[in-house]
Amino acid sequence: MRAMGIDIGSRFIKAALLENGELAATRMADTSFDPLERCKGLLEEVAADKVVATGYGRHLLEIHTSIQTITEIKAFARGARALLPSCRTIIDIGGQDTKVISLNEVGSVKKFEMNDRCAAGTGKFLEIMARALGYALEEFGFISSEGRSELQINSMCTVFAESEVISLITKGAKREDIAVAVHRSVANRVISMARRVSMDEDITFAGGCAKNSLLKSLIEAGMGKRIMVAEKPEIAGALGAALYAQEG
Image (tube, rainbow, N blue to C red; front, top):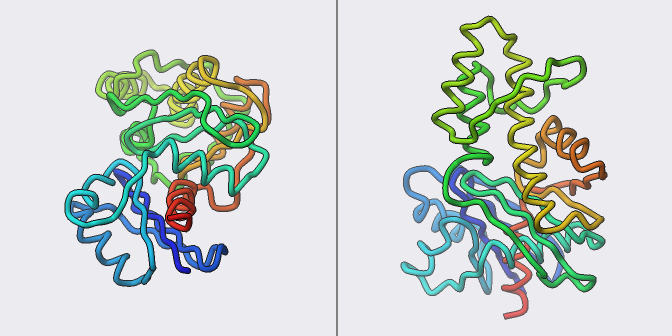
């Protein structure tokens, strides 16, 4: 059986294909202005017997096709557990929301919290701040925090935070120091969510932002706990959806 999961995020669409229970292929594409067409293209490219969709834009497929959908919480819980079977707490910083999920000993969701009301503390926030500081997003998360000043970004509203960044630039602050302060503000928000939900180990960082080494190190330092990152953290949601498809 070929089972596929599609995770339709605000920035990227991820797909994972399971063939007879084994991960056979993964795909990733920009969501673009027409995510439905992008999804149709992936479905044509990777033929599957059963497909389940998740993510920010999953309802597009639910409305326009007969594809079943599941929540991001269910998909990430299942996918992260498949990638790292020992995990009990999942952190995911997506393009439009940030999630912290607590799992019990068998991998079922105990509790979760999601910030999805604004871009604050999300991947989009980091993208906007990178642009304001003249960084490519790919290099933004690889700045060293060692020896950096303790600058603070006080506002978590994206618009006001960008104004703070511009103000710091005009006052002569080093852009590397500002970049670390931006990451620290996101890390502090995640840590605050984790304290309300779970800090049980093992803790895994899922999603594309898990590849941001500066963010990971700041969250680890603030929590005082080691965070694990799978080899392909960005496919956690798609893999979880594929596992549900496989069962159906």
